[in-house]
Length: 248
Length: 343
Image (cartoon, rainbow over all chains, first blue to last red; front, top):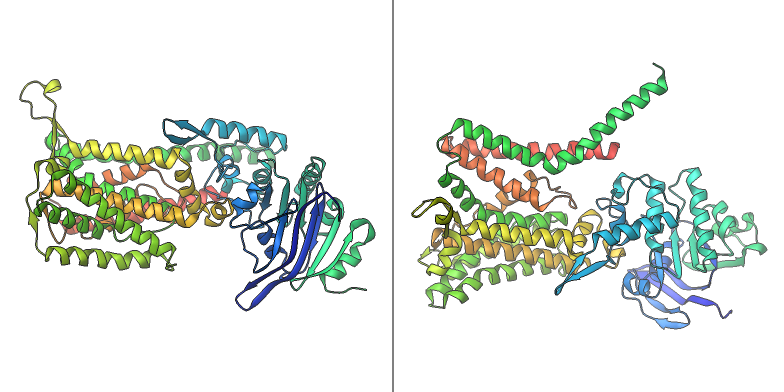
């Protein structure tokens, strides 16, 4: 395995009561690499992402960040290690403005005496800078997320994930809820992140997404590693076969 | 006019209308208060706006507003606290017993908020660590428990007579001789000042601190808050503890106002608190509402009761009216949501 390894999962299993969601799953990710993870519903893709981000604790197995073994107790721990997740359900608070969502849990503050108060001005400024860097167009950084379209919400979720110079970004079905013309923008954004040296894991059902942005693709089937290949050595039909549990 | 033009016009009209929504959302309630004041002034020109009556309203709402403020924070997290009326009674009884036991006044003064604090923390821990299915159930339980304990420690009888320093909080007067001349009868109630200071502190807390922002985030989408690394359970314990603490302060104010602790103190006032919060524009589904709205909701309830009393309207009609206003306020909230999702 290369020296560029940024993230590795070894023999990860996850049980929910009597249900086995993941069984001895291995995963590795290199710097600046885009890895596609495919699999049918219930194959364990989302569970694996939640284990990697610290939302779930693995029942068995271990995680390595930059080749060091780590224990994640919450998503905060993985964030501190430079891993960010864009959730399928977007994990945004609709009642809060865009800027508040991007900085939720990591709000810029300023000290007044012994107290820390929110720095509304700085948050607004950082939000506007970041949105324009990613070329995301919204009326105002103060607009509430519940007033945005699906594509705009996805953009905010990605903006949130990349606002703190993440080294690894996990995306769960980033294009599933989008209008066709918005899909291209998100895929461009992923390729941009790759150029900046960010490693990305993309879960997707859409072969177009996988074959546009990924360097490597791995398939899960019924909670286990099923197949894996460099993208150049495989084809759409083969990957679709993997999803259905067929291998030559 | 062709089709495109017509659509453009519709859009312009809508955007003007839509632009007015946030304005009404923010200030509509203050407008309502002004209308109520104007109407009551016309109906009772000699009495309603008199210094004595206005200070009376403020003294009445000061202890109730503490309950409403606490319940408001809980409702912002999409929770509920039914036990605040019992917390106010228990903290009042604790204060009375400490006073009767001859403790110095500054200890007695701390007893009520401390009891409220502990009661609230008990609620918070039950809801989070014991994983009660809904705050309604935990606080319904403690509604009975806290009042029961209050009656157990007091023997179910009133206790009267507190130190002057205690009474000043609920019943004190800041004379305005400087403005109105020597011997003037105009004054500002101490409890009004206390109420304004506490509302201001909690306005800062909810709008200008990280925990305040997280409280709103939890109400909007607890999953998002958790994914952002926020310890949702810990924040919920803080919220219920603060709610109990405010009820304890309410108990302290009530002690000063009535100079007695009585078994029926705070009975059903949790419902008044919830009503004030809802009338003040907070959403029962969480994540929405302002401290100013709570203040307005409390004032609407207070002014309404006071005005109806002045006009000798029966208590039964008052109940009917307040109930109708709650339903109307929530219906307005429903309409507002419909408009918000349509844009």
